[in-house]
Image 1: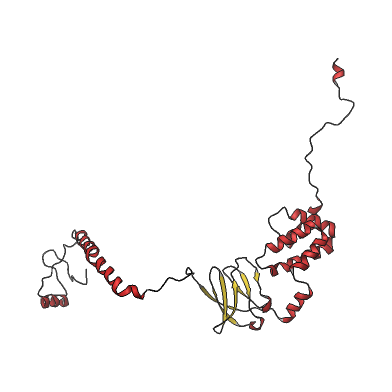
Image 2: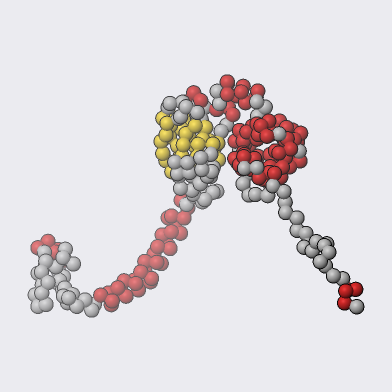
Length: 270
């Protein structure tokens, strides 16, 4: 190493003055390994391995049992989850955005315009303001979705919600009045949302489609929509706008020749 051998030379290597002074003080001689051909390296490393196994490992176990073991504490009950930290400004609709998932989470409306700190992991989202936690949500990975707690809404918004009848029972009752397929489709829409409150705007839109297109067409559109994989207001609206609900299912009937005078029976060959 350059720190210990100032000048490598096969016959007379040069050592730093401090190292030579230390060697003279301890009455030892200094020798350098052969330059450019470090054939001694494997042997030295093997000796280090032997020393580590026979002496250090035994000593380490002894120190662990006598000094360290009693200070150990039990492992945490849950597995450590990496947390991410970010800042955001509360928007006018009293939600903050986590850009990684592009999902919005609600906070109490009085914090509109305030800057908050967001701490989130794979399962939970915590929102802080001035060191105090003001909201906590289960993490939702739905892009462009909203996770909202009713208590975070202003009183007027809660009043509007009550006036519109934003409850599962209200919408399912309205859907049942229209028909069984409509009822089943409304249930699918509600089940597709992690938080059922997020499905109410879609259900409200579906009720308006009943007013615009009529009960029969809405029932037929929901019957067709149940055959798909995505259940939303947009899917039913697309079916109605393109008159797909009026398309009748093709009947798989066997082909038969029509009856006419050119056909001859077995009597023609007597």
